[in-house]
Amino acid sequence: MKAVIFDLDGVITDTAEYHYLAWKHTAEQIGIEIDRSFNERLKGIDREQSLDTILIHGGAAGKYRDAEKQEIMRRKNQYYQQLIQNLTPHDLLPGIAGLFAGLKRENVSIALASSSRNAPAILERLGVMDEFQAVVDPALLARGKPDPEIFLTAAALLGVPPLECAAIEDAKAGIAAIKSAGMFAVGVGDESSMRGADLSVRSTNELTFELLKEGWQRCCCIREEK
Ligand code: BG6
Ligand code: MG
Image 1 (tube, helix red, strand yellow):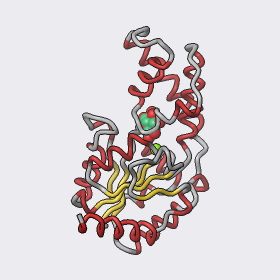
Image 2 (cartoon, protein in one colour; image 1 turned 135 degrees about the vertical axis):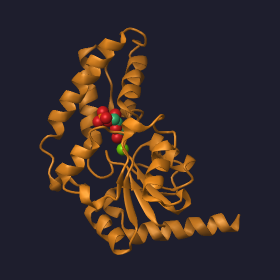
Image 3 (spheres, helix red, strand yellow; image 1 turned 90 degrees about the vertical axis):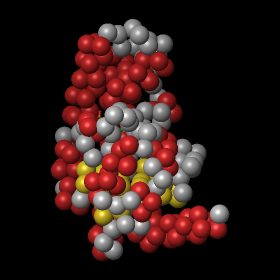
């Protein structure tokens, strides 16, 4: 394991909750109700895909012109940015600072593969930008998660082969992307949504370098036995 690639929202900090609140508020304004269970489908996918998924759910696919959709997304992002403006280093999820320190100690490179265009601002507010040797710019990608492009780009920026990378995700689409990239997938969350992950934890406070290494070695043994 030469690199660990992190998702941001719901892995490094609890902004997945803020995305949910912002979409819920915005969807209500156009007469669409969403709940937490529906929200699982929005995790990991980009802003445009999220809006399309909500419109289909609300029976409003095709109802809005492009300019109107842009305006809905602008409002969602404005509300989201209000929610994240007071983030501080205290908002790192439990275990993440320790994991960064463990990876640094073991000379394992760290990269970010987040679909969020707000990611750099969030990393700055959390005070962890310097932990990352590479941050993928999602605006430069052709395809979002579950396509593997974002994870393969992170590996390429680090100069590490995908087979030497582990990646951590809280979203179904993210786990699928990691597996298609040929990487070791670590899921954070309840087991049903993390199906397909090579290693699952309920909470980030379980994540340590030692746990990742143990899971990685177990997975490599299985690969070799096949
Ligand atoms: C992902 C989140 O990280 O980023 C999604 O899981 C979100 O919920 C997506 O929609 C895009 O974020 P942003 O900040 O560019 O709207
Ligand atoms: Mg996430």
